[in-house]
Amino acid sequence: MLPLRQLVRLATSLPKCRPMSASTGPTGPMVDVADDGGIAVMTLQRAPVNSLNLDLLQAISKALDDVAKNKPKGMILTSALPTVFSAGVDITEMYKPDVQRLQQYGNNFQDVWIKLFGFPFATAAAINGHAPAGGCLLAMACEYRVMVSGKYTIGLNETALGIVANDWFMDTMCHTIGIRNTELALTTGKMFAVDEALEIGLIDEAASDKADAIDKCKKFIKRFDKIPPSARNATKLNIRRGPLANIEKNRKREIAEMLEFVLKPEVQQGLEEYMQKLKAKAAK
Image 1 (spheres, rainbow, N blue to C red):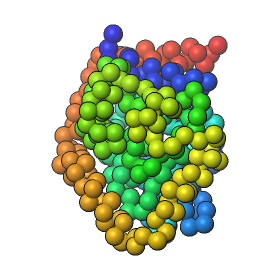
Image 2: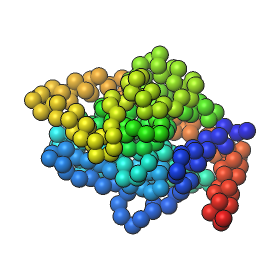
Image 3: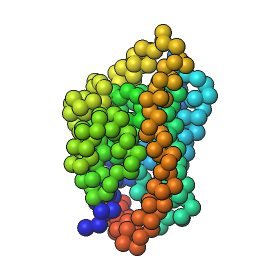
Image 4: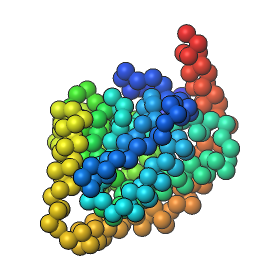
């Protein structure tokens, strides 16, 4: 079986969620930003599972720029969906792609990570549901993670699906849980339950519900009320300098490798079979 055929199982592997879709869903914005006492709360709201298509990535990127301009105390990233934080990459971006759009997609994904990982203010993720692959990446790019208790999982499971995670995915996990734990997690494609994620440091706290998770994120950000912002932010960026430098160095190579892989005839064949399965399910 082709690795990509395994990859696309991400679209249907989340409990109680419909398959991913390229549709932008409701007419409202895919990203909402609200001010809560000087703390920006950024909510992803692309139904059904916040799959990261180009439009959502561009919306996140713009929202991050807008939030940074307002110089908040900090920012909380969360989801409007009841059981999913983000399911990660939208596979439909890779099916019969326009090469220019696909390249733009890869660049935008990198841009979002760079902005979030290097955000000049305190960041926290209120993870109110499943967070596989790219969803886990967004959460790890934040400084602090609070996950709602329940039958949810979080992790980078690319290896279990027959693919190798990008270097910047690996760097982010190493920065979060250390090299040894990352090696074990990635080589086994481990998806962590909430208690397991807490034990290993993939998340910092568990919460009873989304409101509790957001409250805990606020408390984290408020820790810095008496810390000079310039010193705190400079320290954060110095600590994160390595992964940020690595992605800048390897951006063109990784985009080229992604294009080469996705455009292979056998990969497109696997995607064709997947899309037909989605159509068959929708017709029932």
